[in-house]
Amino acid sequence: MSIEINREACAGCGACSEACPGSLLLLDEKGKAAIPKPERCWGCVSCVKECPARAIEFFLGADMGGRGGRMSVRREASMLHWDIRKPGGGLKTITVDSGDANKY
Image (cartoon, rainbow, N blue to C red; front, side, top):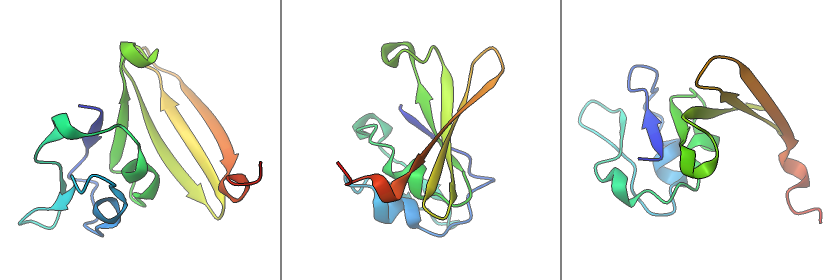
């Protein structure tokens, strides 16, 4: 599975469900995000970017060069801060301005 949902942190806003291009995420009977068929996840990270509670993380497996790290996103206005937690500890942050997404 390419994403992991922290159900305790989930605010139940549904932003992830709206953002998922494969319609794979939904809110369960408790109003928390769920992915009933994780094997169908494309790994596009749309849900990770849209989750205001940072309850969804993208698993960076060895096939992606991540060796088991996890990535989440913090948003500040148009700035996206991609936080990558390394498996042995440590944090790397990559910041991009989403306002520049279509600049080039």
